[in-house]
Image (cartoon, rainbow, N blue to C red; front, side, top):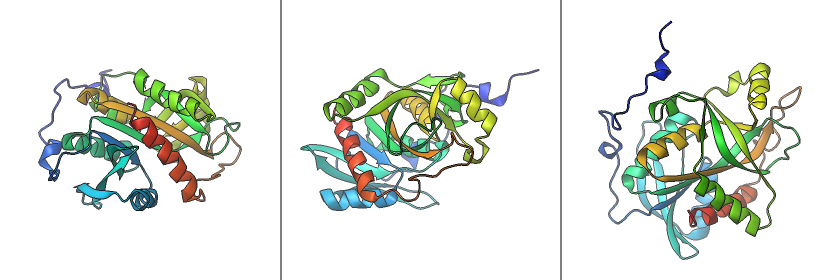
Length: 256
């Protein structure tokens, strides 16, 4: 039996289409630090609170994404929404790097594979199972990929300084949320996974190829470790709680 398509890793770093072909160059220097989330409403609240200004935009047939510049603790940074799912989110990452980003932190919600992990509990991924397709275009074949130890240490240091409860561990990146079967959940738990989401492994792989600092943390949301799926805070989380978590992410980012 021949190798499967995902094992066909190409060491050529650039494709025919490059991200700089599709971005709009900002009129001034783009911030090196970028903090991203998946909630458009949250980003708009951050923009209002910190009086952030538009610095660039990512153009897509699915809708443009505005990138905003602001100061946080007197340090310039950009903030923006990124798309859900590895292919679209890595596309956003590539374009942010082409604009000038060099230190990127992403935060967002995740599903938990252990029902004892409470809603909104902070989780620092140390590695991610590569159960998606995008990462295999950026790094050679492997079952999992480790996050940059420096990013993990920075996030953990900020959490400790703030007295926050958190977990560290392996997470599961998947392309198919409606295929998180009981058997797959069991196997991922046997591999040591404590949470599931849709972007981490691919973002780590892409950032490594592009030689930029990438870090990520997630916070617990829906529970898959139950007889019946429990959405918990998935659709009801107050925006104020998301705001507090995002501000912690911004503080982490300035130390990357």
